[in-house]
Length: 320
Image (cartoon, one colour):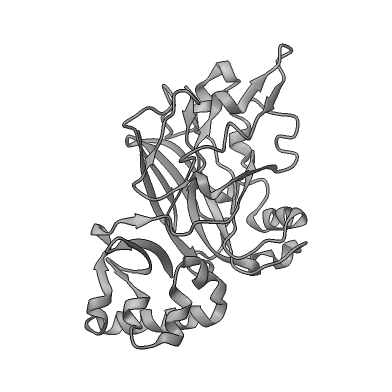
């Protein structure tokens, strides 16, 4: 099942992707107030748990068999205006979580030794098709990172690794937009430290979408192909198998600090191929991986960023 949030008559509505169509559950359940209560928005649906999922699956099965039954509840996906599929209360972020990315950049003291823990907020979030703002007062080195995001569905604290995936509702894509010249700080002796506040948390630094794919739709989150294209050039191409800490291990790690709650997200790091890798001034070390086009510059206005993850989709945004 793939969940979107879309605009209908100027209002954000929950929808389910069904082939080339979006099915609106509130419209399809117009005569059933009790079941409609599960579908007010994405967070309400996530919190509804198995009860909401059962109703949603029944709706999708009926729709697949007889599209005419829900004709007034369907719109063409191709023409829909999408919002972020969810506005998370908290985005817990893990940096330096791919072996190949760590080999292409200047390493901080904890790089590769433990997840680099930082946080983004809902104020950073934009949706599919929205503009990534390049504020040149903030940064001259705007970079993009495609990342798998875990959407928490069941609350828990001190969650054991072996039970961690039971707490997952689904997965989506986050572009961890980064101000590299704010993030990467170098000392005279050549050592590096990261300032993960100003480098990571700013307007439009967390594009999310296009949908949330439920955990059963995705299957094993450590077997997903990941790609980034900028103006059609392949900049990143890897697999989530290259993570240092798996999704289950990250859930365990973050749950030691916080009670994970439905609607929270965990972003899981990015592989090699960022523009940072070609920036020797900031300690970049381009690895020349097969098929990848090295960045000649950081992102600029007009660039089209496509972040793709297998079984989820493609998140497209333009820099402006």
